[in-house]
Length: 245
Image (cartoon, rainbow, N blue to C red; front, side, top):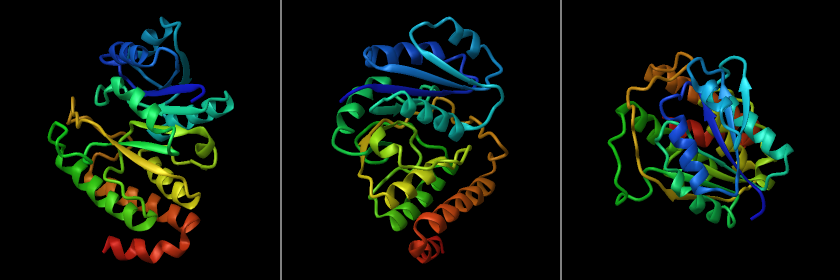
């Protein structure tokens, strides 16, 4: 499998950060761990400063969830990693699942967690707006990319760097995964899903950058998706428009 990097984006995660890092280390003791601190203003930087078993890159200001992943991808690619696993730090992902993602990515370019793939997996009820937008944009992505995905937004993923390095990711906010899906289809990367539990520790958690309003978020996501399709899969733009009606 080669070298694995566990990439953990962090923004004001002081309450969950120590436990998540402990569980990540237990699940993947042989992997490198990189935390991208996206300008945290709580005690997260202090907690990270006390760790010698991980690497930390800090943004001087909050640049966005997507930019945190892009920063980590760039570092992992430059550092010669073979696999990058992304996992959020809010305890909504289960670090003990990391080995399953590492094993699965040996057979495909991107392995994405899905909270909706297996109905038998127990889970919390999803907040209505998140479930609705996930359903809508998953359907749009299926129509445009041909990937039979069931969850467009899960941040628990494993990437083979060989495929990841072909992507040109630029979106700093929450719409960055839309770039991943469209560009992966353009480059004909292989994609698979693994079922994961649906965990909502803090269903009232805010979206940053003025995206708390559902309609604002929908319009933003659609703008990102349309731009990506126009750039990478222009012949499929009519499919997108038809599916969005």
